[in-house]
Image (tube, rainbow, N blue to C red; front, side, top):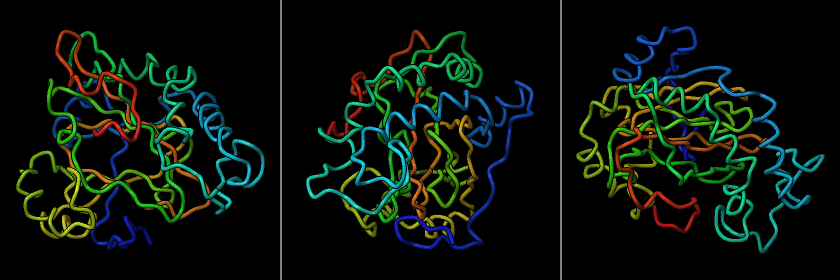
Length: 277
């Protein structure tokens, strides 16, 4: 069974993302606009992705891992002084500034895809690039839009969700509420946020079933292999599923905007969990 933040997502509310790998350019652009996302397989070099994953988990204490350093397999043991994800002292805090991570984010292939779906000759990458790592038993990303957090600059932004390593649905893959970029998400926030498990923040709700029943739309997801990516518009509602495996989930949100436009100035520095955005 798939769940998000401890709530089982009903089978009737789950659908599949469309694999757009074989689409022609115009069909990709059309799908990005009409469906709000584009799923592409084997975009990045598999070995590079797996190496970045290994380098990240090599920074973890061996007591948290099963097997070799960098395995990414969670032992279930968490040191008493282990900092929250992305805070100073946690590996993610420094890793987002590492050469291995930045080389992955600056892959020409990602920029080319962003230029294609945005229909512009050149893009720039937004510096702030969140790195998400989930282990079994921790909270997942609640239903939200990127637009709620990235709203002081151009709205013409393409987010490329990059799973760093394999990411099955049971590992905590991303899920999109189908065609939700067509909906009034402000009204959704006002209606459901007060009943969410966390009242602080710009997310809509932790209960994916509520949104599915209310809108009559399914949550679309898929299993991802190293090198796969999914691109989405800032207005689409998305969330992550719970990590239910010992294999830890690792991913990055790489974002691009048209060269010549102004990006949200709050996103001009490297990401960390206490930056407030």
